[in-house]
Length: 211
Image (cartoon, rainbow, N blue to C red; front, side, top):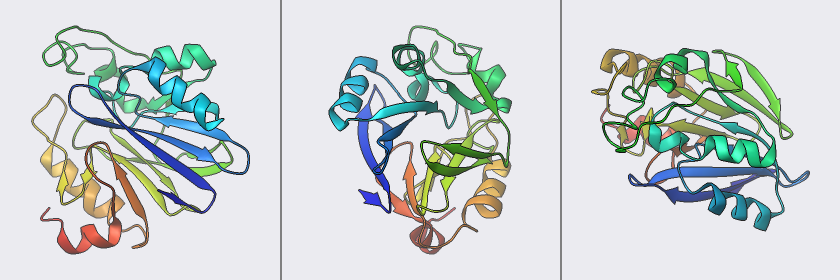
């Protein structure tokens, strides 16, 4: 599915069916990798098949099922891994990032660039707003492309649902505030690409999301 100059390819990867997105600028072929869950070689092959020029890896949060292929892809294409600064501790702890208790093999990751809430990125020819959305994890982030009417929501907002808050650093009250104060106030036409499940829209979630 695509809008404006952005072309979005979705791959469902890993043991819990995580959405990894390739967001490419049709005009320049520059490309962003969002939440590379697993199978770095497969993602790299897909990037090359699109003719994409990778610029960065963007992580919505540090859980193992969203970061598994990040370092290998970053090294392969010599691009930075970016994540919100508040996620530093979780990503560096194989218990908190769930790689040990759920993945069975602990591993950690350090970002090359730590982002901050409200930061405006200019990357791959896109203007991107970094939105801190704590709740699923304390350092969860969403990436909003205002000129493309696109939001990558990670595990903060799903179609008709929200992310779990019973993992380390999770908070239902924070998730509620993130949802109502930061995401549902975005323009109704915004298409939402979540960390799991099907795409949705801000318009639909305002009307039908029970949370």
